[in-house]
Length: 114
Image 1 (cartoon, helix red, strand yellow):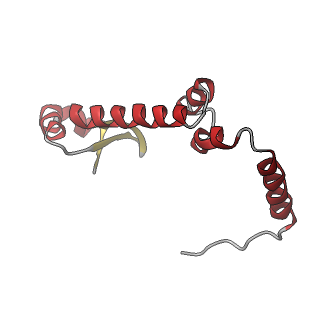
Image 2 (image 1 turned 30 degrees about the vertical axis):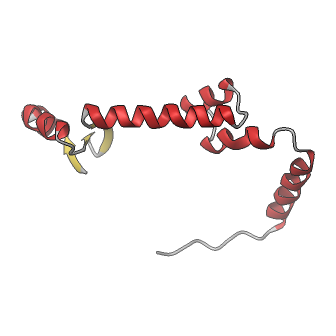
């Protein structure tokens, strides 16, 4: 995936448009900040199909449309899509509380150096 600044994207838009239609991907940025992506319409359609399939799967597993809407809007963590599986399991509430207590009792982890 190639990164382009706005000026370059504007000056060669037709070329980048043709290349995106052929399957290349581009990130467009301004002052080092990513603003948009240029992808082909087929790739966008595939992404939309995948999103719709994941939503149907989450609904089949018991998730509510309201929670899925919050996830899509960025107001909830994507892991919440699976929560519907365990919504009625009382023992999992106790287990999650035990995990939280255990995490709270742990000393801080040292920073990871890569």
